[in-house]
Length: 454
Image (cartoon, rainbow, N blue to C red; front, top):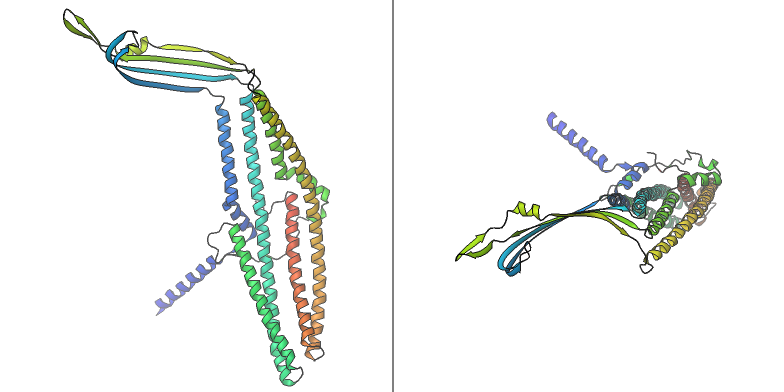
């Protein structure tokens, strides 16, 4: 009997542990980290970084010599020329040739050097782009996370309002039986309860959709039991609102990734101009060639009425006797190529001007975004503080209306109106709170404070 009790207790503990594991609540930090590790766009950006690394290897390879080897073997049947002696013979011959060549760029208008520098800058730009993608994902996750919290609190408000109205319905039934209020008021309260139930269902669906949106943003495959931790404290830990917009903008110019990307792209455009101009200059290449050949043909002759076969010399003897080498340098001077080089230079200069404009635009956009974010955060704080004052007033008005309704001095319609205004005020406090939190996060983001701390 005791053994069965132990087994039952162990089963209950395991089941409880399993349920807790399945319904683990995620923190904002966990959500952001998971999204950064699994987001598809970030993975694609990581592959772009690897591609830039491969391009750098190719740029380094331009400084190395090119080495090529070749070999061929052929059969010639019938009347053909002996490649070794140059005589025509009716015979079957085999011919083997082999060679190797080495080439190296001695000077190429600094194109190889500038290509390598451009490759290094491309790696930097790809890494900045990866960071930018991670920052964007972190902001999106934070927004979705706060949306879930808002919907959670809004659901609680609707549930509390439903509970209050259900109690009020029971109270109204008693008042109707006592003759204190007309039956029509009871029907109004009943309709209000039905409306509240519908609001609860709507709030539940909205919460579920927001959870699904966050789970999909995290690239979760299974999100039936996905939930987030309730952290509703409104904080400005870094006291970012004490900063001026100018100070935030100056700090943002030092830290913002989009500016770093624009500056790096400008440097890449400058290297492209240098590479294109390098095509105007002469190129000097060194080369070395080696080749040899071997012929397999038995020479047949008639001597004193007898057919005499003279075997071909040994393979390595022929290979050594027939080898040849050449080496030297080749100078190429561009004179005219249909304006191709000139057009490439002009095209790269246009791209350079575009990069300069893009950098200037990024600075203007950053300044506008910072000032807008500061104004939005300040407005959100004022809106939240005003909503709290409004809620306090609505709460007092509701309490007063409740007292009047209880003694029959207010009809059900006016009382329901007071309840509706209170519920709206409660929802507005929640909305403005999370709106302020998110706008503070954006402002901190521009100031160089990450969404989560590493």
